[in-house]
Amino acid sequence: MIGAIVYQLTKNLSVEEIKEAGLDQYFVDHTTGIYPAAATGVPYTAASMQVKGDIIADIHEDLAAEQKARVTYDNILRFCDDPDVIDPIRFLRAREIVHYQRFGEALRIITDKLDSRNFYAFNPEFDKCKKK
Image (cartoon, rainbow, N blue to C red):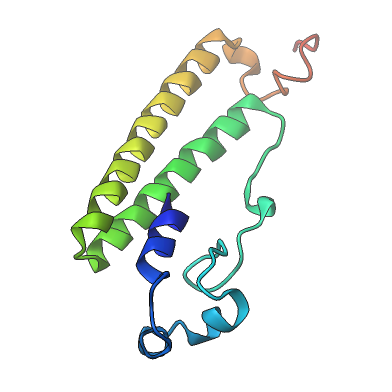
């Protein structure tokens, strides 16, 4: 959705408007196409998606990702005054909050089902037969 918003905001810019907005370097490489990158220009990579294969570690990573996305949307809202951008960003922000809540519920369910004596002693997804 963010890519679609950026595309809609930039698709009809003139060269002067592109330069004025500080998008000239981006334009040279990507025209007004969407190239997922952080505000610092670091391109998106799947390496940012953390998976350990341990359900507890992975759920905590999911919780953190939802909060990071929420903060990004908060920051976009601080800079934006266009209602056509604000409304979808608010929707996305609300969605991150709901995702965070659902992942929190999942973590509670998972930990309730684990033997508390072995809570961090083994990977419940891999070492099912090990007991201490």
